[in-house]
Length: 458
Image 1 (cartoon, rainbow, N blue to C red):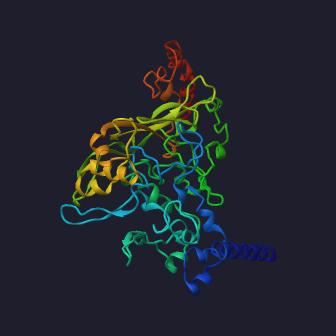
Image 2: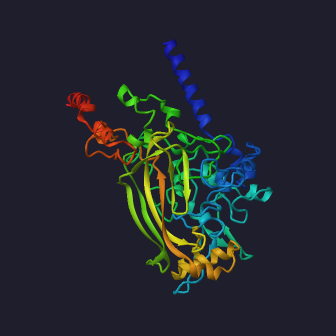
Image 3: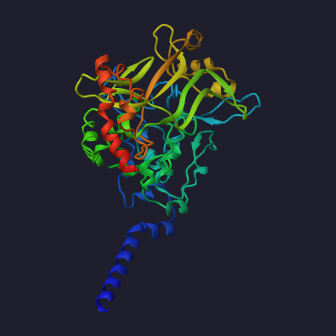
């Protein structure tokens, strides 16, 4: 009995300790004094706001060392980059009010609506005012009222992004949840599931099915967020992650599968589907039911389309009409990866052949896309913006998006999916000779193994 009582008391003490650790230490102080933004957080976490100003989540740019034709001393990202998923950036599409539409109404728009600040201290800003503008709770509160994060005009006519700085939100702080992350990342590119084409939930991703959240893999240190090597995702905090970081280089029970990991990326077999926008036309905008215009978009749902496979050495081809993986079967360092193919139509400079940026405010109100090109050219200080817009020529850009989510174990590709004569891999297109392709699609490779698996399943 005494032993049982001792065990019981130990368990009770352990539960008490666990409960105490789960409750944020600053709760009583926040209940007493309320929440005043980062200054409240910094009573226990000094220097974190300034630290955050040096990250990609705040700067929307970084130095990039794996993309062709970039200045190694400059920083690139959503702040200043032009490509046809967005066809604009934070510079030309700074958060603003659109001109009035045909119904005499206007609304706020801008690529930096997800920026975790107040817009007065915006992308890349530094100093005490910027530190005070950081929205800590938008990432760390599980009870954040996202309805308060909307732009409005202050009493001086300035566009301000609202924040939920309520005591209620501050009392619910902790590790970022899926909702905290996906509120911005799922809706990027002009709508839900448009850009990346993945929903992170138990029905679409094996990690989510196990109860994992985004930051279990993207585990930040000093607010620097680890990311992969998506050819389209340039800005990074200098911290990279990979499947092998958790699963190792030989994650399978079958040696035949482990033999593939040297040349085949984990994503190739474990992310067999993709989705999101397939194509957009920024030269022709369609009027919606609300009276505003949006780029014509061809969209597929998550898990609705098949990826394209290509060799990737983690360096990026960067051309006016193509952004995608650089690599070869024969270079000794590339692996085979899956990609979502996206094509965007936009305006190019007739003289230089370079892609032109677009300010979305004019076409959003009127549908006049060349007015958007002219406004962007003016903002960027280009000579004779009206002529630039008049002479602009439409063209298509192909972009390869890395497939890094929608991970499945139960529906992963097996031998016949790749090595069958009607498999997902085009071996000739991947650099194999006709004889090699025939050898790689011979049932001798997979027949015995799959028959044995079939018997075990029966």
